[in-house]
Image 1 (tube, each protein chain N blue to C red):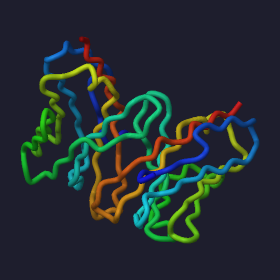
Image 2: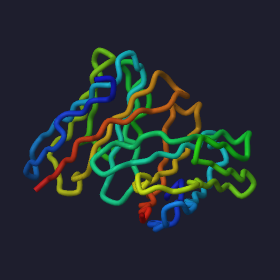
Image 3: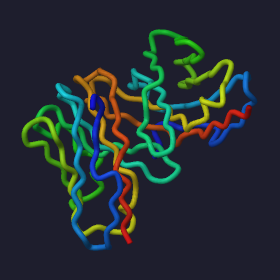
Image 4: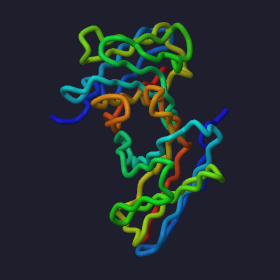
Length: 113
Length: 113
């Protein structure tokens, strides 16, 4: 049973456009939701994270929107650049449970010049 | 280097063989995690160490998999009687403690022929 469901599987966006990736979860005990960026041959790198006590968090061109009642959260990449082309993973965990992260299946983003 | 180091970066071996994968966490990080990432999937939790002890090994798929961290720093993931289904990228991550961001290494790509 997949704890975190991610969509779309792949995404093509023009340079300067907005990339949107969505995730949904079932376990209401989850209280930490990070997004990771992964380039080929590299490990995932933390991009941005949110706690459920806020509905939005913004860091530069990256924004997480969080909807607690719908059990959904999404990553928005504004002014997408070719260098953003990578695979993005959402994740969720219960911080008190030793940070056992559950990852989504990933979204491969391709930003065209 | 300042990051998480994993060796070897690639490992090819025959079915039935024994393999060891090594992880050097960031200096001073007490928490260490192992994940397995199959092609086109997100990382899947295997085991978590806090210090020398395995605080959560619920993700280990069966008793062929074992991990140690004898001195609370370097960790070794050991796989006995390897099977073709064990082929994946094995990722290690470390953090300064529960609730802190996890920093991933670039993984070991294991191929079982």
